[in-house]
Amino acid sequence: MTIKTCTNGHTFEKTSSCPVCPICSREEMQKKYGDEFPKLAAPALRALDRIGITKLSQLTKYSEKELLALHGFGPSSLTPLRHALRQKGLTFKT
Ligand SMILES: [Zn+2]
Image (cartoon, rainbow, N blue to C red; front, top):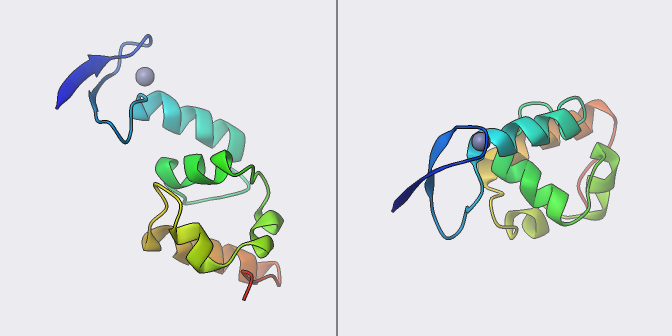
């Protein structure tokens, strides 16, 4: 394990699966997705970002299984999304 300091002065553990500063990354993701994807952890937001999802409604093109296959996207991320989709009358792809 390596301790790194980012350009904004945060110290963090650098791992091979997550080489970016988690604090900067979380701030960046929340600025971009905060209102659209409430309660979602930064790794899950990054996973969605990587496949080009920026809106909740785009999730209807993906099944829960497909999302769980993304790096950083765990089962705990599905629950708030499923809830948010349901409130808009939407569901994951089945
Ligand atoms: Zn940072």
